[in-house]
Image (cartoon, rainbow, N blue to C red):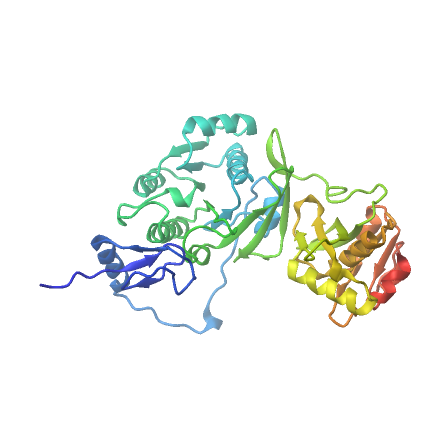
Length: 448
C-alpha cells in the first residue's frame, strides 16, 4: 500500500516541509505549520511545472526602449507625494496599518475624488456591506454615479465584474478576505494570498488598471500573510501614528515608480482623512518649553519637520529603566552610555524615558543632539530656550557629525520664527538664524 504523501506549509512565510514542525525553521514562528490537502499539493505541482511553450530571447539593454510612465492625480496632494507624483496606470499598491488608522477611509475618499473627475472606480469590500460603505461615503462626500461597490469575497466574481466594465481604478478591501476557487484553503492563508495577489497583478498589468490593496497587519506591525506579497506589488505604504491623535503619517517602504523615503501627513476629522494643510506647530509647542523638552528638525523625505522630543530622568529605586516612544531604544542606551563616559553623569542609577510628540517615529540620526539636550535638561531640571533647536548626529567618540540638508533645515527653522540653532558645522548659505557650532558633546553644556 502506497504511503500517503503529506506536505506542511508555514502560514507566516510559506516555507514547506514534508513533516510537521512546532517551530518554522525559516521565520522562527511557533505553531504556524499547517497540513496541505491533496488538492492543494496537486495545485502547487501544476503551478510549478507549468511553463510557456514560446521561449523568450534576451536582448542587449541598449536596444530596450524605456517605458513612458504617465501619472494622474489621486485628488490628494499628500498621497501623490508618497506615490512619487501620482497614480501610475497598471500599478499594484499595498497599504497596511493598524485597525482604525484610516486605510479604508483614505481609499474611499480617493475613490470618490476620481469618480467626481468622471473616472470609473470599483470598490471591492470583503469586510463591510454596501450599506456600511454607503454610510461612510455620505460622511466623506464620496457619493457619485461613477463609484461602484461590490461586496464580494470570491475572486472569480470580482474578475467577472472587472471584465464586464471598463474600470479605471480598483480598490480591494482587503486581500486577506478574498479567496480563489482554484486554491481550496481558507481565506487569508499563504496559498490563497499568493494566488490572489498574482491574479490581481496580472489584471493590473494586462488591462493597465491601477489597483489598491488593503492588507491586515500582525501584532508586530508587519503585513499579515506571506512575505512574497510585498515583493509582488509595485508599492508598499504603511500608516503610522497614534489612533488617539488626529494626525496620520503614510510612509512609503517600497516604490518602483518613485522614492521610498517620502511621507504623507493627513488629519482625521469629521470629513474623513484629509491632507494636513500646515505642519506649523503640529509636532511641537512653541510656547515656553518645560524642563526635559528640546526641539529639533528632521527630514522626512524631501520635507523638513520641526518636532519636540521629551525626556524624563528620575532617580531609580532598583534596576534602572530605559524606555522610548518614537525613538530607537538601542540608540538611547548608546547615548546614555556616552553621557556617563564623557560628562561623568551617574545615569546608571536613574530611570530615563523618551517620548517624541505627535506620534511620529524618528529615523533621522540628526535628532541625537536634541535627545541629549532633553536628557540634560530633565536631569538638571533646567528649561531650554524655546527659540533654540538642536541638530547633529552623535558618534560613539562624542563627536557631533554633520547632517544632510542643513541649509533646508535652517530655512524651515527661519520660516517658523526660531532664531537660534546648535549645529555641528557652519552653514554654507547665509541665514538669519544665529548658529552655534558644537563639534563634541561636552560643548552642548555651554548652551544649556
